[in-house]
Length: 554
Image (tube, rainbow, N blue to C red; front, top):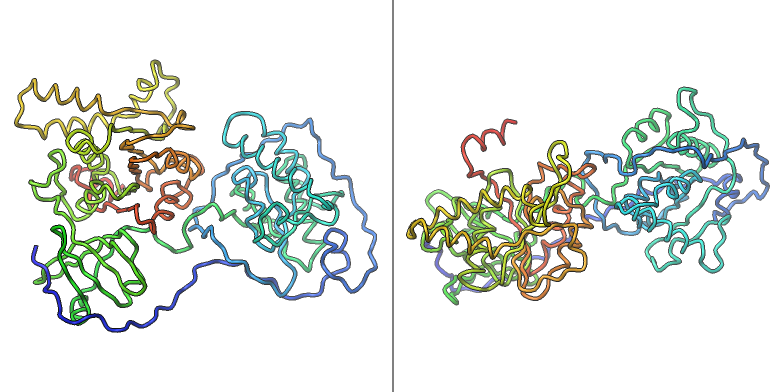
């Protein structure tokens, strides 16, 4: 591949780049005078008038024997997510008061510490629902128990007073400045008669309405993962928001693609400052300029222009205002084929360069159906296990989430139970077996037996506590994993292990997961700056013209 000649001048001093903060902060409330009534529940707020008005209240008891039905993980909104990392903001007026729905606590047990300097209010019915959902081995039950332990730790703090509000920074969360308030007295509210008064959702709406009337100088906001509850709250004129802290991406952001196209005038602008040299059969370039601020380590860059030599490289070093990138190995050529598989497009070549690099321990591949994710991962794994003996075996697993109705229990051992879920493995092994044209029928049969002996199929249910030593781990359909499940799997890696996560974010089958809250999105975003991790989005389908057309129009 012809490359531009190396210039004979070094780079000049570059202009400093302006760092743009993407941290989101809560919008401070307008500065207002605090009413005297507010000190009844929030005595820490300064009030000039100490006289308190007597308030009448109706009985707000909770019937503990009544069966309350609430979907703890109701479907979250389709809006783009917010960042999980927030910068603490200062307010010029009273902080907001967030009333949490039960499903928020059971979705994220650490949500109490995600609201910065703002206060949190828990209605009594929320505690009752936590108690009703704490039994069992499900994720929801575990989160309910974890939330109960967190509340117990906060209540048990020294000098803590429930009536005065409990400081949320008492358990070591120094970046939290708000307080936690429990419902310690009956509240008076009036909801439409069409809403059943005994339903838990309606009781929480009544609490929000009562707090809004009693403390008009503060903004009272309901936070819930239940779309229908948020709609009902807005219909009643009550502020309601989705819990956004479980989302990975900022509003309007796009998922990191792993590649960057250089502008057409790149070489003309870099002609006097670029440096180039060769080492170990690769050509290296050192460049500078504003484009460096848009690069990440191990990101692929390419230059394609009519009449100009093309360049395909990977960023290997970012130091200050300069970046170094290295040219890639061409896996599109037959002599560089991985187990007989060659790259058919630019992104597949990028993927094979990552999969075959022993210095990259974690690879994420995303793309639509038929882009070759599983085939490339298996081909690169086989050649590194059987030919190069870099890894001892291939371990393959996937999330067992069905597209349609569940077919019930499956007989057999762990591997036999996982067999129906691993149809993609069998299909791709059949394709890889056909690449060996030199051997006869007996030779291909022996190769197939050898391949299957080096591939182990494991279930996600038994991954806790495992350690994979010197393994090539493939996690298929990773878009159906939660961030917690993704963390559990990645932390199984021992010395010499490489993990590949693949998935199509447009085909999420797990209820309550979206593109923004998927574990695959979480992993791509968190690992994009790690020197030993890489990501690429496969853009073009190579399965068949029918599959490509169906992906576009259906």
